[in-house]
Length: 102
Length: 178
Image (cartoon, rainbow over all chains, first blue to last red; front, top):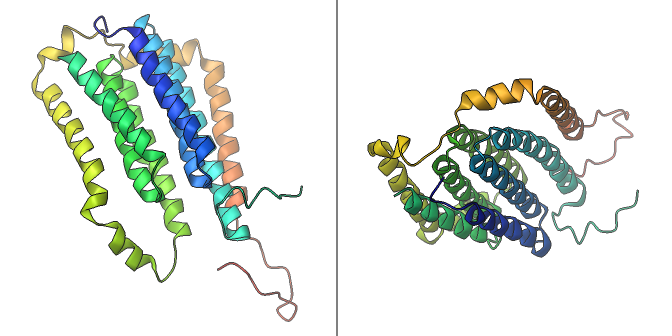
């Protein structure tokens, strides 16, 4: 860890997070949006592990485990919602779903 | 040496992630996403978090991606699936992820056969420290995460449950999904 500066790690995490954010904004397919959210969560976890590795503390890795739990819960509910949306509307295009009435 | 491993893996991760958000087919994007997760696992290993690297491979690339694949398979039912499959499995599609994973495999072999990499350059945080910290300092957060996962299970079950038919069969309306 001495050779690799922490800034490099944060730059990589930032690039990955930005790519995920771009994916959420440019894609209109719900599955791709969910995948991009996964990319963003993963990038946040990468930043946590980098920080924990820089200060030689285990806390960063603990936070990554929590992020993993959150990602798993989010994906299970999100995919169940995608199946429901597809059965009801026969499409995964979020623009076509924008006329939801509560 | 470790620096080279690190920057190669990070570059592969960024390239694969860029490919994820620009693919048209969900399965192609998933292929690249798995490559991206594997390369980030290499990054975790290099910066001294082997436990997290293993978790990344097992849970992210293993379990969560499998969930995605199941759902995509469920949504793609139909007679045209086989033709689709034939057009998908052209070399143009699998060659990109294969080359990237091949580089990752070479890195893995280098680490495996270069035992000198282990002790000198890396300051490894052992899984034991992580576990001790997790179950003393963060015990409340662990319980909260457990509650969250329970809510996720119940939510997914509730959403995925099929509706029970309550109508008499003469009054039954046509099911619009099948």
